[in-house]
Amino acid sequence: MSTVPEAAFRLRDVRQEKSGRVLLRGIDLVLPRGRITVLLGSSGAGKTSLLRLLNRLDDPAAGEISYLGRSLEEYPATELRRRVGFVFQTPVMFAGSVHDNLREAAEIAGLDDQEFPERAREALELAGLDPSLAHRPAQELSVGEQQRATMARTLIGGPEALLLDEPTSALDPESSEFLLESIRRLRAERGMTVILSTHRHYEAAAIADEAVRLSGGAVVESGEAADVLA
Amino acid sequence: MSWPNVADVARADMVGANGMLAAPFLQERLGPGTGLEPEILQSPILGLSWLDLVAASGLVLLAVGLSRWQRLGLTGSLIVGAIRSVVQLVLVGYVLVYIFAIDQWWLVVGALAVMLAVAAREAVRRQEERPLRLYGMTGLALLVGSGFTLFYVSLLVVRIEPWYNPRYLIPLFGMIVGNAMNAAALAHERLAAELRSRRGEVEAYLALGATAARASRGPTRIALRAALIPTVNSLMVVGLVALPGMMTGQILAGVSPMLAIRYQIVVMFMLASAVAVSAVIVVLWNRRLFFTPDEQLRLP
Image (cartoon, rainbow over all chains, first blue to last red; front, side, top):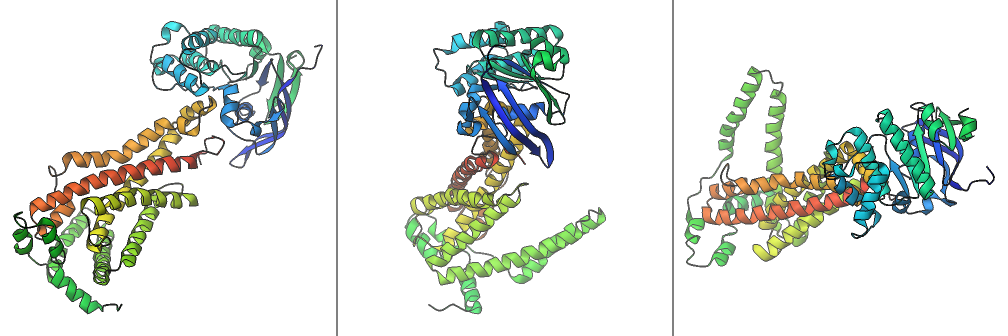
């Protein structure tokens, strides 16, 4: 590392609770821009709670979070979420075909009709979903295919950053490897900031530039992947 | 203005019962040669005395007997319910007789306001979560939905004179606001249930940068359909399965069936409007209660 990477997200003393239960406490983190950061921890460690804060599906109970130097609250929530995409652990497809799903997302992102076919093709390709599935009812796809379809749906709007919550948990090893490869490409070709959570050490080792080890809602260790995962 | 005493009012009620008070107005509206006039004014009407009601209570006793036989545990409730229905209706009867006799616009408007407030409270009472704001928002939705419909029917269709004529306004508003209340309660309840069960989908929309309105489009549509379907169904089967209560009442009270059905048609259309407008307003306004201003889903 020759230069200090620019921060995409910066968290200061972030605390999160739900129904009186503490989910996250004392989180101080810098998540660098244009890199792949892996949140590593067992279930209940606070990975999902943390990801949900980054595109404001939830707000923290206390603490400060900024994106590209501006507090998250300074962005209109809808704009922030278009720029910071989120792929959930359990894929949720909208009604209709994969193509309909992509069209919904394109409309929300404000793409015009002329851009759509090319962007849809590109998104499917990046997510590794066979284009022949595009006209199949999305809810009939396998979980792995749905996972890739939601990834394509998130990518079509052209986000700068991508949050992925245990993206490979429902995938077989081959599909997992393919997905990780897609993520590497997004980082390499588009300079995308990626924050990915996983409970698998080997997966983190395979993809991470940076790693954050979470346990019981607190950061145990963070830094360059080589150091944290060693 | 002096307040009539109860005995005078009760006498006036007996004399003027069964549509006779409205007769001059109807006569004027119908004009000669409609063939309805003699029927309305002259068809023999069977009065009901308090003693007749004692006989009717035998029917409740029959239900009580069946409940005891089958050990339904409903005997107490049936008896309390029967007594309550008598007391409540007698009270309402006196209130109506008073309002009709005093015949002042402010009293009629006051009565409508009370009906509206009770309806709003009842619609909210049926919900699991009842933030304070819900009362005001639901009341306002019912006011707009019911008020618009009452205004339309009383001024453009029935053309009530004077505009506040309580004999028309109060029963019409009662039907309107009662149905609007059911629709509002159903719509809100369904919206809450849909948002809860489709939380993942709604958040997937939000995560893409969709507004709360867009993210809840599916649940909104389902809530509105649920609220409107009973009314649509009643439009389909009215007269086939059962005669509507209002029409039955008019016919029993001696009104010509042809006039009664015309009123019933107005009522059916009026309810469709009241239900649709109230449900749409309730869902679109109350939807905001489930989201923060920053488009986050807020489910209890």
